[in-house]
Length: 270
Image 1 (spheres, rainbow, N blue to C red):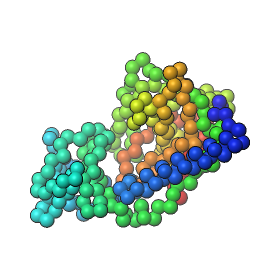
Image 2 (image 1 turned 90 degrees about the horizontal axis):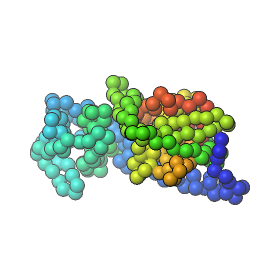
Image 3 (image 1 turned 180 degrees about the vertical axis):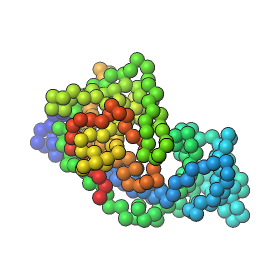
Image 4 (image 1 turned 45 degrees about the vertical axis):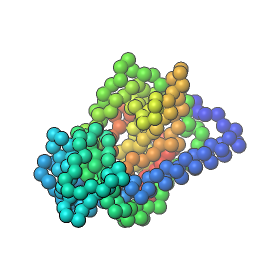
């Protein structure tokens, strides 16, 4: 593999930088309204439904998600208390809204073309008991210099989900090529959140052994002008489905199942 070059002191710096990044990642994961706080997963239909861990009766239709709040019930939307019937409108795929209810938030979202409600309560036992995720020691050898090759046109790519019957469609602008121990490998990359950044889902020979079986994810910075990009597997992280069944995580595309053991990044949660 072509790895980022490090001296002995540089390796110490690399490990320290990784540790600081992982602390921040863990803090976000365990945030009071993060996915560890989710207490239920509810598919919405045109029939109003009430859920034990949220106020109001919820439904969806052509005009989007609606909640009907009973007397004495309210939600806070963008800092304003709302009562009675409130419409959230049509929510875009993979978007989420987070109206507040006391110390909780009620996630209103769309996943795989379906509107859902997922209440998030800070006192959820899963969040309260969370003690962190184990990971392989940071190793510069797994920060591999690769090259990004854009497709002629971005490709809509359908992938499965950990939720039965659900399909996700992501836009794949290209692929990243790199080598591990002389073996040429490639990963299809989806568009990331940061401008020009990339998002990769993958499995490898450690999946289901020391790492979570269904998937791990990588966020890569925007490649250089010549396509150079560092594929830092030390920053491979678990998706929410590694911790809770109340998730709709996508599965990697078939070509992203690496035939090598990537002994880097996060392991199976303890």
